[in-house]
Image (cartoon, rainbow over all chains, first blue to last red; front, side, top):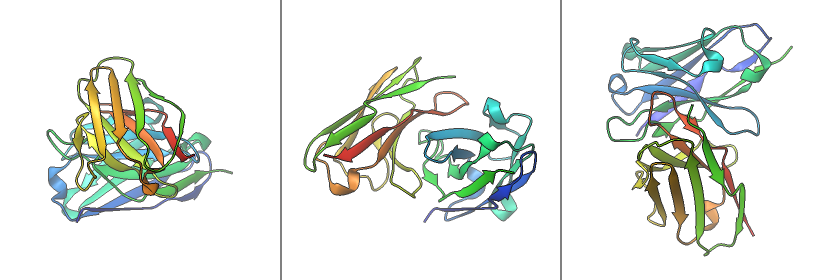
Length: 120
Length: 107
């Protein structure tokens, strides 16, 4: 079955950096686009970034452009989010999600999330 | 950015009743609209995609309709496990956006 497991969250000071990972299993990872989506405590969902089946296509929400980088390693079935210049407003649970493919949902399976807290 | 507006903000109903949730887009998203629900402490779960297609394993009491800018999620007979927060999501372009959510609570 499809499984996505995020890791790498934690407490970081404003201006600091963190790298999130998402380990995928149960499907052919290299065939699927992937996303990162976040949810601030007690708030709604916000899409963060999107990557094609290779590193050549990426998209970001405006608030993270120039600070966050999405990448993937298809040989390791892993998705990453490098987060630099972190701000308090980046505090959230970060979920990775799979794109189901042509004609399917853009985010059909989600991991359980990893919590990032930006605070001094 | 396409803005999604969900209504109502909170819906109070009893098990066995019918629930109707709405999602309106600020511009046409064709049928690129999905619905999720989220229970406390859990990740969102996909219910409906393509405005009206049920995701794998989703019971047929859940149905979606609409196209363009106006969409509806209907739960025909509420079960206790259906009480949660519901989000709509549009994916018509390269940037995904979500509605602010509707909280479905037990009356």
